[in-house]
Image (tube, rainbow, N blue to C red):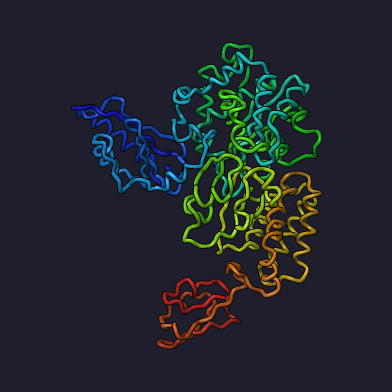
Length: 593
């Protein structure tokens, strides 16, 4: 009998675990062991966990690697495992009805994996798996064979810019840190990912924590730091667990601690849990939090690169930036710069969410268009509804209209469109989304997250929110749009930190591209998307009404009246605009305007 060998990879990111990934993995381990005992499989057949595979909406995702080919299954449950093993792993005939369809190919066709190259490929809790794919070789080369200035030059020539949002040149930041005077220097990884809908940094740490550790080692050697911190929010328990485990493994191998790689270089990393304050994504507020103070920003200069943690030189990079560094050292700056555009090199990881057929985690070359991301990778808008806008940069970003779908995704192009790259959130909006309400949502978020230290942010965001609430509540006034623009520009210009300086972006970009929608809300007291409840009116179409009584029973305000077999009516004076009648009607007899 011919023996068979295969490797099975089970997605164990949060979506995979929520879908039953642990049970699926255990089932594969049991069935594979049974088939090996029956001598129909080689001992080399194995199943192991991996990080996020990207197509999150279809978890539990399972990859079967057999004879050099890869097959991907979706929505897998434990009771499906024996059939996959017997028919595919043993019999070499994939179970076709459970395969991911052509979506998988189109989802990955235009992606380029650098940061995520080994996420979904290796077991994130196995340091040997990382070492098997050249893990820690870049750090070894840097510490034992390269000079700090050579490393900084390589990063500079690669064109790598900070992936945390601001896009500051990484090589320049490291050079400034190298030149800063101070007996003790620090490297800080900013993993305080707080944007609504964003999960890029979390996925990197969950899928390949060693890549971040290795990037920190290289950065520390380049700037002369001896201590590192990973500032990560406590709401990421899986990421914290895998990162902590990886740090223990790295210390055991001698990759952290004293005399790393037997060189005259000492460096170690501590984990600092954040309490979920969005403002702590700002570097000076983050520093205050690590020091045990309340997370509030301070004026700059001095910048952290000269006076940061405990007034010592401190280099702060985000997760994605640091995870990119080992690949650049291994393969060279020219290789990395060959991707992207002249001013925005390399790739960018995005959390693609919203009204999209294929939401998930993607990594694309800089310079790709929004159209390619939305229509090809994302598969287009779900339910075939018209695309209205793409929100990039989260609460600090802006909305880009469908008319600009051919916009290049790079730092400069997004800024010119009134948005930002941000950390990588990308929310797709369709015709059912209200841009005024969306602007209100983001301002509501930043206003709640404002630390309150400076007046422009503390008071300015509150006033922005009040005006937006007035508009969506049906009480908009002539001149409100101009008030929002004037106030927004003032908050941007005078706020102390990046939170306040970018908080008006969702409002200003929405007014810039969707001014007519604001005007309709104010002038006509209508919401074209039918989202703002206070602007909606409900009535019963007597020709379609079957007098079933469902709307009467559902109305919490007793605004619906009518006897049996008699078309019902809605009293506009009593209606609270909740929409319950519209939702329960099975005959389309309730009109919403």
